[in-house]
Length: 148
Ligand code: AMP
Image (cartoon, rainbow, N blue to C red; front, side, top):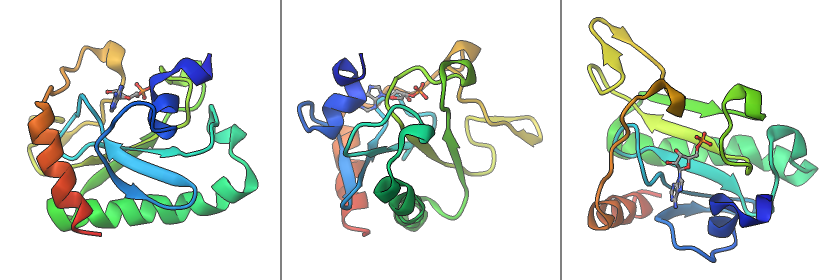
């Protein structure tokens, strides 16, 4: 059930996350298993499972929230960023709570293969995520908060 899922609990602040951005409709925090440093998730405060479940207020606020989080990440990591949402199980959505991935990118980062930048988010691909310590996530979160 959606209410039991981890992102729902983070949205309700029942579980702690490294939140560095908040507006009326959305919060953004560091992914616990990032693809690259600064990998963040943007989720609505009020629960919604997929993009199709966003109410009118959330629909209107989404663009601004994506933009604002991208600007914060740009200040620390530069302009390159991959942004992704999966809505629906068959699209690869694994947590039943709407979330957008924002992944800071740079030349020859972990997603590059030879001369090419790949976009690999699918957990079933076997791509190995990072597992930073709480202390590292806390430090990055503090820095990002100050960049707003
Ligand atoms: P997806 O695979 O697109 O459904 O993405 C779910 C994301 O949530 C994954 O990137 C996970 O690493 C991330 N995640 C799961 N639990 C937590 C948590 N407690 N704090 C931050 N991110 C989490």
